[in-house]
Amino acid sequence: MSVKPRDLYNLTEDELLEKVGNAQPGSTLTYAVESEFRRRVLRMQIESAQSAKDASDAAKLTAKWTRYSAIFIALTMIITAIGLFKSLPSRTEKPPQQSAFEKRFEQEALLVKTCPGDPRYASGPTAITVRIFELDKKLWYEDVDGYHTVAASPETVCDILGVSK
Image (cartoon, rainbow, N blue to C red):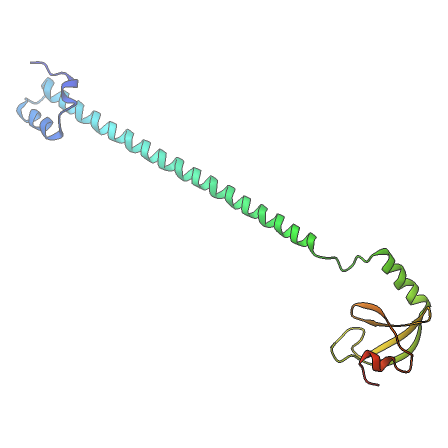
C-alpha cells in the first residue's frame, strides 16, 4: 500500500505518530510521515516569521505616526508662539504724531514748577518729583503714561494733581 503525502495532511500529530509506530524504519510510510512533520514545522516557522514581520511593520508605522505627531505639535506651538508674539503691542513704536509732539515738547516746553513725587509709584518719572511744564499757554505734567494737560494755575497745580507741596 502506497502512502501519498496529501493523505497525511488532515491527520493530527497523534495519528501520524501512531502510523510511524506501526511502520518499519526506512520505509516509505516513515519517510512520508517525517516529511509531513517537517512540512508542518516549516509552515509554523513561516507563519511565525510573517507574524513577526507584521508586528515589526506595525511598530514602524506607529513610530512614523508618533514622529509626524511630534512634528505637527512642535509646528503648532511655534506658530502659536509667533502669533502671540505678533499680537503683543509694541512699546517701541509710537504714532508719528506722538513722536513729533514729544520732540517739540522737549525743545519748547518750559519748566514752571516742581511738585513732590506721587507716592503711588516706586520708580519712574513721577517717583521723586512731578515736574510741571508750560507749552502753548497750557500746563503739562509727565507720568508713567506720558504727557498730560492740567487745568490749573502754577500756584494750585500741585493741589489739583493730588500731591502735597
